[in-house]
Length: 306
Image 1 (cartoon, rainbow, N blue to C red):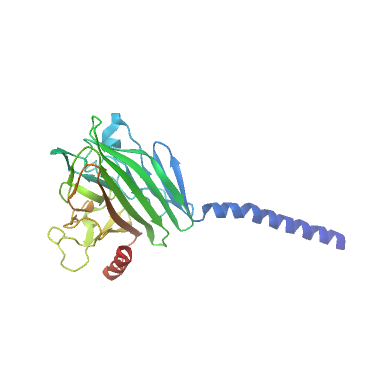
Image 2 (image 1 turned 30 degrees about the vertical axis):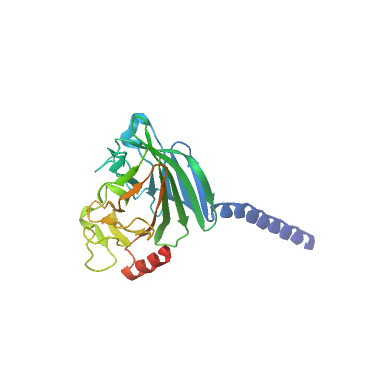
């Protein structure tokens, strides 16, 4: 009997070890950040096994309305559906977190790189890195006319940092723009130029709200506001989005942050000589639920700016 008991104990121990050994790798695989590319379509950013963002890279010259620019989708808390807009809907050229200038003027000739008349085409990923508490990638993007004249080369870098619920994503966006074709003016207006966020088209437009650093701020009038924030409702879920404008960005910046469909962002004109580069930097902090308090946002901005 004692021998039988010893055999049973040994079997239980071996089974326990077997379960532990097979479970641990799966847990480790899901921990922290990971990047998963579907070439020619998108790059997924996952954290603890959940997709938090999706960078859309598809480009087809026969479908410019759908593929004329790369952009970043932000995903819901389940990692299944975007809470940002793709092609179609109201103002179909608005897409997730995106960039553009409606009057990109090269040697006196203006080109629209805000809509889908001309092209921003993802070329390749210059780098991809993922670790436990941070992930990053850099997309090489060429801005050109629809007939192929190369105007701008961009290195668009995204850095994702670990956040805790109810936060969904904290991402820093850095855009290095180099003038290729001649002396270049990055121009337009706050409605049609800069780096912007566009919620999903199905939001409840009656519940869109904005928040600024001080009570009474007017984004149409007050220049160089350090940040602006959006609250919107999609289905039965409220989302909060804070966009921060780095202090090293060009001055005289103006926000477009008042539309009920939720597209908002910041713009400042800049001039580049041929071959010269400019780096634009922003941070987006996105939550499921109400926006953080104004004081909390300002503290976060102070950390980012320093």
